Structures are given as C-alpha cells and as structure tokens.
Length: 261
Image (cartoon, rainbow, N blue to C red; front, top):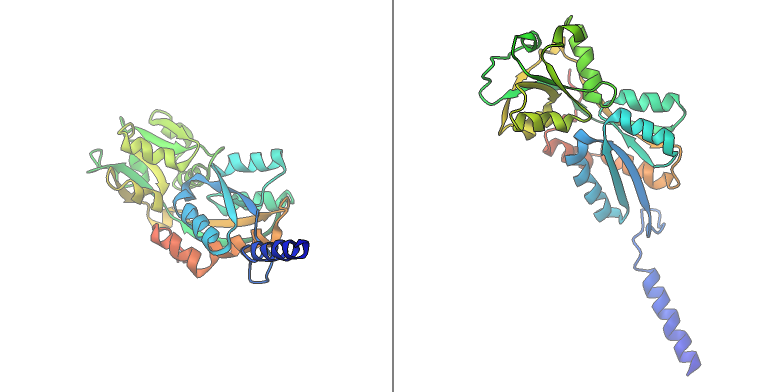
C-alpha cells in the first residue's frame, strides 16, 4: 500500500512539473517577473506587448510608467529593476554612461507635432504662432520627460526662447499624456506632443505638423539594467519589443517603427 502511495505521489509531481511553461531552451519560467521602467507616452503599445509576452512565455512584466528623467532618478535611487524604456534614447544613453545598462536596442520612433483645439480656432500653423497674444500653451517639463527635453531643443532650433514664451506658457507637464488631456479638457489652445499621442486625442484636437527641417525625431530605445536578476528573460523581452511581432503592435498604435528619412 505504501509503495502504491509513493508511486501516485511521484506521478503527481511529474505531472505538475510538466505543467510549467518553458522557454525555447527548456528552462522553467514559473514565478519569473520583470520590472520595466517605461515612459508614460509609450504605455498603450507596451501594455499590449506585455500581455503578448506573458501569453507566449508565461513571464509577467510589471510596468512603472512616468517621465524619462523621473524614471532615471528612480532607477539610480532604488538600484533595482530589469529594463528601462524612456521616450527618448538620450536617457538610456545617460544610464549607460552611469554604468547602468547591459545592452540596448531601438524599438520605435516619435515625431513631435503641435496639437491644437479641434478646428484650430487660434489659427496655429507653425511654432512661431505659439507666441501670438492670448494663445494658451502647454509643454513638457524638460526636467521630467522626453517630450519636454525634445520640445525645447526644437524651439531653440527655431530661435524661440523661454522668455519669448513666458506670457503664453501656462502649463508644464511631467508626462506627454497630460498634455493631450489638457486639449481634451479645453484648458489650453496648443501643446507639443508625439505624433502617436496626438492621434489618441484626434476627437478633441487637430495636428499642426512641424516641418521636417525644424523638427527633431526621437528614437525610443529599451535597455537591460545591470540590476536585473533575470538577464536572460530581460534580454528576451527587449528582443520581443524589437521583433516583427512587437513592432506590429507598435504600428497598430500609430507608432513609427521605421526610421524616418
């Protein structure tokens, strides 16, 4: 009887062991979890990629969404996490200089654009129109998020200073998402956001594209952090983001996956 019980217990253990999800190399992915620090503006496609990755590999990716600069400070202070994907590769470069990055790869591209109220009642068609009297402007905070840093570079390229915008700049955001919400709430007349983000608010606003010669395209990179305790899975998720399947998801959300000329 005891021998029969032993055999039954053994068979149950074998069956339970065989139920674990495995990667291509046969390693169990049970209890694996990754922490991804991610730019808030990338959340729609990243959420879908995270779900697709879990479905395929059974590995959970926990996301911490915020502005790129805010996330970089958090990474340095906490000394933990697996991946870092801000809204511009500049921040991954800064993390790399600080010795925090094991590897990196490009995933998508962002093109800044002016988002105005539906129907464009203030007739804003170029950057200089943001200086018109009475135009309520919102921009990203360059000390907090990628869109803010890139925006001020674009303005400087066109000879527009902070002093020039002093009277009209009524709002500075910590994330690009907040700028779209200001257009939705009709609190501002114009903001500068990523092109993909502008499309999420197309019901409430219209785009006034910035000419290519005046614009600065941002590249979105993902970096594997040196703190990771699951480097194999972190590298696999980074590769998944940049894979045809990952890029297809980004493209579905109107993100540019081929480098603009």
